[in-house]
Length: 130
Image (spheres, rainbow, N blue to C red):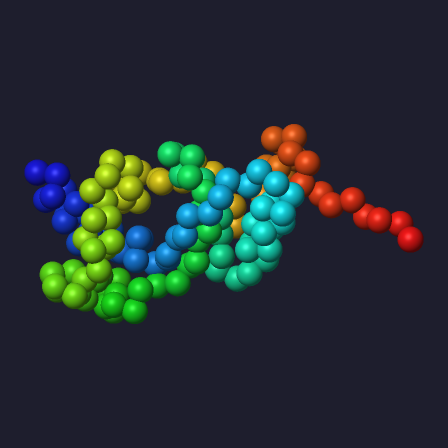
């Protein structure tokens, strides 16, 4: 039943998970790590998010080249489909069709800086006077 549920979602959701890649990053605990995230967010189609499992990711909004004109995976039934695609959605909460994977989502530097300020994090570099 669960496999059928995942297959139906893949065929009807429009390929949300096929429109980006996300790479896990360290939780921003230092000024340098916060600065790196600020830098990521200065780039077009790059976002940062925190999943419900408290893992941080940098996300690159770029569609898979195997999506067809209807937004569906053209290699869904193929043996060449990457294993990460086949396994996506098997863990509860990992499929956007059923629920948002995002606990926090940042699209701009301002959003991230506001979050840091609200958390009481010291992220600003001190300017040295000559």
